Length: 180
Ligand SMILES: Cc1cc2nc3c(=O)[nH]c(=O)nc-3n(C[C@H](O)[C@H](O)[C@H](O)COP(=O)(O)OP(=O)(O)OC[C@H]3O[C@@H](n4cnc5c(N)ncnc54)[C@H](O)[C@@H]3O)c2cc1C
Image (cartoon, rainbow, N blue to C red; front, side, top):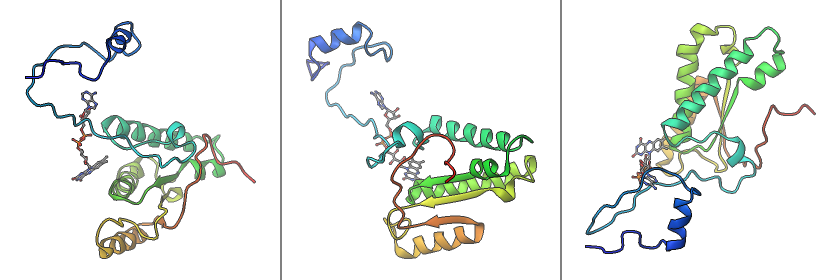
């Protein structure tokens, strides 16, 4: 049985928690023989400037809800008569960075959501929608067999989802892209 249930935390640190620097909920003591810490991992930004501040991550249900809300918001703004076509196109261009399983699956799901459900609400906007997947590698799903990556790219091409491999996203800024 482990004796020190706050192993690794100095008494000063625990005090600072009590003073309210980290208020994450009620604390309680649990006796254990062996402790497994399996708290998952953070989404990688690969050090890309502006990603942490401006991108939507997709790791849990909360992230998925935020993405859905933003997609609907883009359609709502795009449907306003006061929105110009140029802004409409920018609002309806959804860029997914990362051609791994999560990026490819979310691109396919987004495409289904738009072409099957949102099409009923915004029939005139759907033809303006663009979905692009970017990956720095020359192929998507590079952790799997080559054939799977090629199959996914071919399927996406038929569905109108653009895949841009060998593309390195260098920075992500807020707001709409500036016109040159
Ligand atoms: C969009 C998406 C789709 C995926 N699809 C697949 C798939 O189809 N097939 C597949 O095999 N894998 C898939 N994965 C990967 C899979 O989800 C992960 O590999 C797996 O969940 C990792 O398990 P884990 O237990 O290490 O971490 P997690 O599942 O992240 O679990 C960690 C848990 O710890 C909790 N936690 C964190 N900090 C604390 C704390 N301080 N105190 C207490 N609790 C804490 C978290 O709330 C969370 O519940 C997908 C991942 C994503 C993001």
